[in-house]
Length: 264
Ligand SMILES: [Zn+2]
Ligand SMILES: [Zn+2]
Image 1 (cartoon, rainbow, N blue to C red):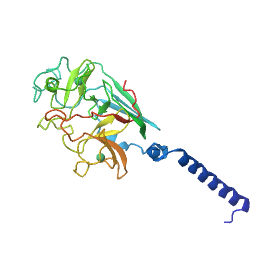
Image 2 (cartoon, rainbow, N blue to C red):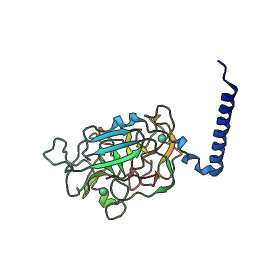
Image 3 (tube, helix red, strand yellow):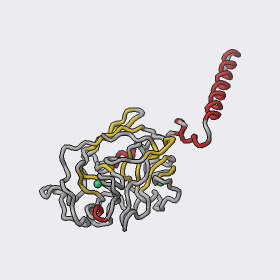
Image 4 (spheres, rainbow, N blue to C red):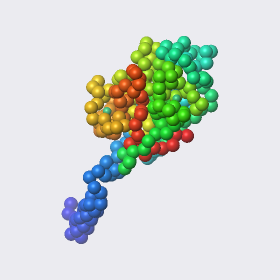
């Protein structure tokens, strides 16, 4: 099939126009902005959301955004359950318990981009939920309610899941313990831990091939493949393989590298 000359000229014109647009864009941004280019944004692999506890977490996909809604109620045992609950166990690692028990009418909802991007500057995390774990339990940072770092006396209140109870409910601060009772949570492995408020996934300390990543940024993040990304390179966080206090490993103690969305 032959194209009329005019069509060819228009087509060539369009290509030249598109190229000049692209070069204009490149001229405006410096090298450090390359990862801000929307064309570089990679969608979060949807198979990761199959890992979330369906009894607690509802995931809604809406084109460019994903909404994660949880009631914060975990699918594992803990001494923080009411003693009448089938999932109640005597403390395994906790020395003292904080007041309150799992339950109540909690709700944690966050809407994140389906293809989150690195922001031009990182953002410190605040108190309260900074992510939602696969169990449905909110992820907190390395500080307690009065802004003091996790210290021995606080660490003694963590159950084997690395959680305790607070005014805002049951929440994780640190990596779970390697005890027989732990049949669900990531401990020194490649399991998905949850999703952070900026939309990036948080994995355990290891890569899918069992090795520890060596190129993590200050937040425990890097670009690489994950057990869910089907060979595609995505930005994701890991639990940083460093003791935070004694033998305790914080789940997430750095800044968020993407744009944080409010967990309501
Ligand atoms: Zn706490
Ligand atoms: Zn990785």
